[in-house]
Amino acid sequence: MVRTRSDDFRWPLESDDTSGALFDGFGPERHVGRGEYRGLEFLHVNARSIINTVPASSKMPFRHTINAYRGCSHACTYCFARPTHEFLGLGLGRDFERRIVVKVNAVERARAELFSSRWRGEHIAMGTNTDPYQHAEGKYHLTRGIVEVLAERHNPFSILTKSTLVLRDLALLAETARHTSVRVNLSIGTLDREVWRLTEPGTAPPDKRIEAVRRLNDAGIACGVLVAPVLPGLSDADDQVTTVVEACRAAGAVGVTAVGLHLRPGVREHYLSWLATVRPDLTDLYAERFRRGAYQPRREQERLAALVADTVGDLPRPPAGGSRPGAVDRVVGADPMRSAATAARSDRGAEPREQLALF
Ligand code: SF4
Image 1 (tube, protein in one colour):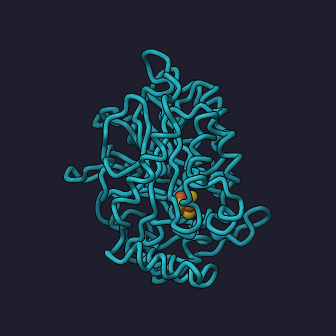
Image 2: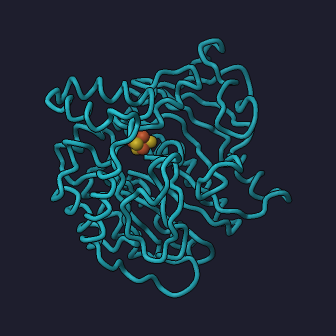
């Protein structure tokens, strides 16, 4: 363990959680990853609070989130959480992928806050910043610990992930879903292994994620899929999209949403710089698609919507009542600035809602 100089980081300036400085102390403890975590650095911090309350003015479909980690070793090229690392004085490139902030007291804080007399048992969304089942979770077990506390409290929650590590907690999630609302969404943007290797180098293979969808639903845990982001020129051909949607349907997904790529400032520069290196032939296409800013023309999202609607048909009907598949909050993912009306989705019984800020 190495004590990092406090002036290497701007911890007190992190601004997306509840208030003021989030971490106790004067800087993180730096732990160098070894063995299967070689190449990673874990920056241990003690969070002052773990439940983040979304501002009332937000149109997000949830009010409360928990994120035990900052940064993500899944290293997706398009990840729009990257700029959040800059709030900490870290870089949005390699730093985001290799220097993972670990809120080591996350479970302790979750217990204190969820069992506080002030807590009213509202829904908690996890995976709203970075992946709660990224590699670090295999070492720290913070997401599992938080789920255990949520289960004990019978507190409804949802999880968005690209990781099959969620299956480690299958029995826990299944038991919890017997007592409260539990929703999992797997993010699977493509089944094209070449595109997957190129764009999501730290994630589980997409076919393994499809299998995870099947196992979660078979276990009685409502699991949908976010087909996102669909990448222009890489994974947006009609047959590429419909192949994913068909696999989701076959796996029993209770909801499918497709969302096209968007590129907000910071991520835009990072992604386009990467693209110019690996696929310079696509430069002109992206210049055209994103000529107006962060979003592609509406017709692209409408095309995705039609593809999903035409492909998915009726999704499996969830069991009646309770929190079992299909009964919980239905849509996660995409972008806080765009309404669900612009997303391509088929999610039985779901209300059109604003989407979250995620993958
Ligand atoms: S898109 Fe999700 S899984 Fe990929 S790096 Fe970002 S937070 Fe991690």
